[in-house]
Length: 185
Image (spheres, rainbow, N blue to C red):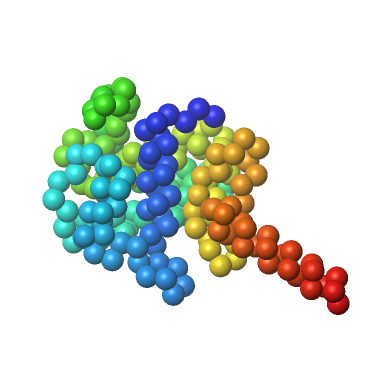
């Protein structure tokens, strides 16, 4: 599956957004407007004005909806959530070539709120996966103590962990130690 630069950026953004949600005892990754501003800067999100508490609340709401896409058991369920997000954002596709990037499509309307911006661009990036029959690539980490979202872009769709150097390695080491302990009896 060909993933364009802007789609890749939107996928990275939606994964990072979903992973800011508090889980178990972890704090919210978007605790305040300053954190939202940092998130916007980190992801080079363009055309964003001054952010407020209302923006923060709206982004938290769509974050929960995007979580539903990664939890969807089938393409139809994921597509329904994506359709709702994109429709509510009032998408207005337009070509642009800003900031030194070649032509690409923005799906948010000029002057859109940060929540609508994210819902439109990230929703369309996820929609491309559903259209391509690749919805199963939108996953949650299989480490029992993690559950972070990620997009499996491996050639053979075999990625199981959000990060093989942390979650994957930790589980492999634990399994190795358990086997050694069992064989030592």
